[in-house]
Amino acid sequence: MKQLTILNLFAKVIQLALTCLVLTISSKASAEGGKRYAIVVGINSYDHFRPLHFCVDDATEMAKVLGQSGWKVDLMLSMESTSERTRPTPKSILEAFSDIAKDAGPDDSFLFYFCGHGFAPSKSSGYLALSSTLPTKAEATALSVADLVRASGAIKCHEKAFFFDACRNSFKSKSDRSLVVEDNGTAATGDVPEMSSGLFKAFESISQKTSAAVFISCLDGKTAAELADLKHGVFTYVVLKGLSGGVVSPDGLVTANNLMPYIASEMKSIQPDQTPYAILAGSSTIVLGNAVKTQSTGININLQLDNNLRINHTTIFVDGDAAPVEEGFVSLKPGEHKINLVLEGPGVRNNGGYKYQSIRREFKIRVSKKHEFSYHVNIGQTESFDPISRRSYRSMALVEEKLLDGRKF
Image (cartoon, rainbow, N blue to C red; front, side, top):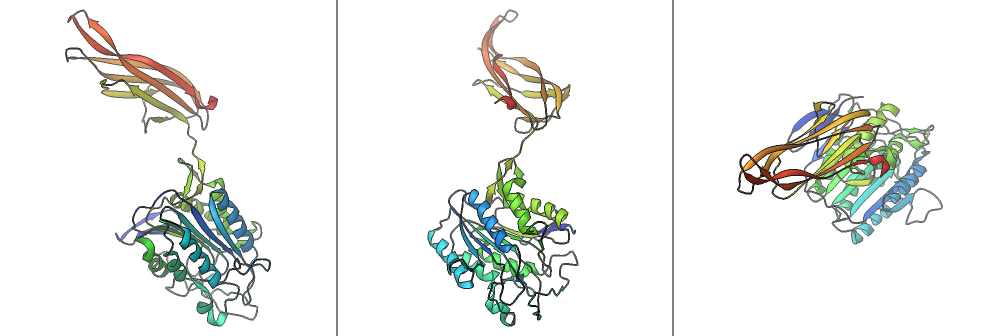
């Protein structure tokens, strides 16, 4: 699989990174909190193209997973049992956008998911094929991604996410009513494919007002696979896994920023010839769902000092060696360790002079994998008398210390 090219379209900086394509557009910071609105579309049956097998199931499962994360989902499926309002047509989908635009505010979030046939003529934003799309009038009877973006512009949400699990190849109609790939080679060079112009222009129109994340299942000129073994489209299968506990993060949230590397890594192992990519406009911390919170192995050092007490140096030794401390946390390998805490600083004398002093603490702990201890130490001051200088002064004193085993909380 090709390396990921990250293209900053404003700064004109190109650098290499993961295994997906990300185009970043600058934007204002996004708002947090509020309600979550989602439109989820799945189409299996087509009048003029070959049917798909798992799109309805994919969309149904996506709606379920999003609902568990607090999204209010409008589910639209190509099934006879669905009403005209919930059957995906250009009119019904755009009306669903309009309905959300009436209710949603700036602090809310919006998400659109589509699973079905798609195609992308050269340099276009791409099209989503609906059940009634005509091969002879494909662009006129399909749903343009650019039209969707324009419709989303009326939605005041500061955070918007789009997922497209659809092919992005050109096609021609055959008697078997299938979509036939015409591989134009745009993804074969390893450079930024032509989609960057069409999709970028579409999403550039909303990037100055919102933060948007666009997740796309394959490169231009390529197809998005369904696998019978998975009973899913590959891209949606991986996204569902990521939203259902696959993504692990320190803050316990799935965001656009941590979901894309997960998608890229998983798809590389499942379907290496299908390369997903994303366009991130504005903040990449758009919250999509709940993640498994990262568990660490180590010890948290919580130091509390009395007022006017100055500490010049705080050093933590692990098994005799000074250990790096990141925001009060010391990482440890599983096993038994000797911890030494050394606090060095002057005690404030009554007459304004200083006496250099230190406090040293030592203890042993045994940690296992994904196991945290917390060490709380409270340092205060005590009145002391120096018989040599015959002066009294305030010196550092240990007030309280606690060693708490995270496994016993």
